[in-house]
Length: 135
Image 1: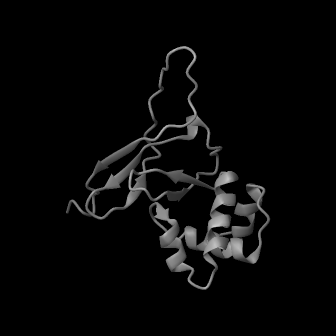
Image 2 (image 1 turned 120 degrees about the vertical axis):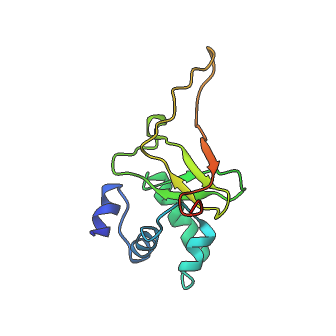
């Protein structure tokens, strides 16, 4: 996988630390928290990890998820994602294991607001038990 190309595609300068953080992010199979990433990168300064995640978010490489736990989760964006309302998708929160899974094949229904209202974001979290915990 060409990690440098992934960063350059989102107009992010590929430094050694950004490449290292991207490689770790791509190891996650579901959404992850800042703490989870910090635990994987124990030799990297925590503020550097946070600043890098913020840069990745601002350049649409990762998106944030508010699952109601008080801890922001992150997940990789798809190649065509621009973090617009049309790019949003639901997230499934497993109440047993606590993992969050992007449901990219399911689109959020169009929200019709009264005149004068302006939509800025949508948070759509489905809660239940994931297929692994349901065995």
